[in-house]
Image 1 (cartoon, rainbow, N blue to C red):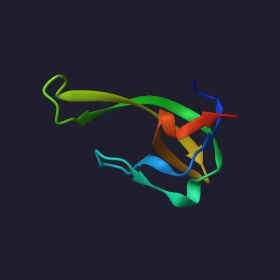
Image 2: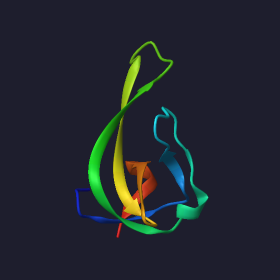
Image 3: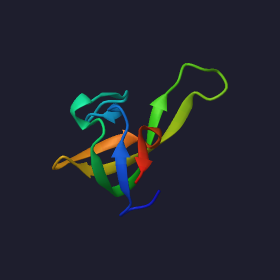
Image 4: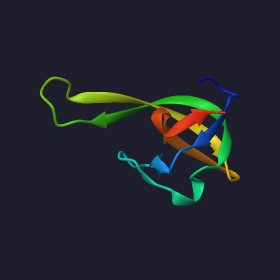
Length: 78
């Protein structure tokens, strides 16, 4: 995936609200198409001894007139 690619949001899970470390669900976005405007990486705290800090790839997309951040696994290329 790269900036400018068209993507479709899966079922609306994997959405990050501003300032939150964990993802949530935005059901209205399910099945909607958008365009990637930024590739990002989120740092999340994992409770494992092997890797105390985990990096999660995300994309910021323009969808439904809003800028939203989703896990890369939550969107598919169109």
